[in-house]
Length: 79
Image (cartoon, rainbow, N blue to C red):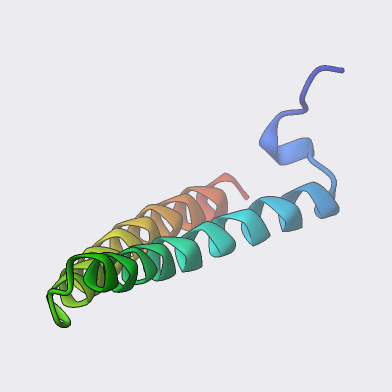
């Protein structure tokens, strides 16, 4: 089944696209923190890996948010 152009997608498809974007942004924030916490336990390195993971997660989620915002602006220009 061919995909429809973005301006002809059903509302449910658009909603699911935004749900996946928001979920991936949350995972980009949480997973580096969890990875840093796990690495701290494995290396016994106090909270340093958690702190680095937290900053990495913040940077990744911020960049993802900027990409979403750009997509939101381009969607509003099409209308």
